[in-house]
Image (cartoon, rainbow, N blue to C red; front, side, top):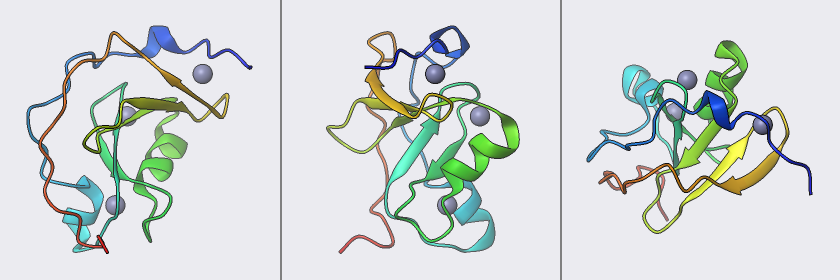
Length: 104
Ligand SMILES: [Zn+2]
Ligand SMILES: [Zn+2]
Ligand SMILES: [Zn+2]
């Protein structure tokens, strides 16, 4: 298993109580499927199964390495640099999220 060395870049350990959705989709009137939160700055973006893939786009443009799923019941994180999934126990909270526009 590859190890992720970016845990020291986790600035968000307390997840927000509630998020409005993918920030970038909301700005352009787009639709998302699943939500991912950037652990460096708190940006909320959409997953790679969403048309615009805003979480990946955010990581690419900012260099922020780690996201966490904020889907209900999911607590995994993903490092874009190491391309590896992990759990980061320091990150706490389960935000309320609105129904996904693209939910089946
Ligand atoms: Zn990493
Ligand atoms: Zn989006
Ligand atoms: Zn970020």
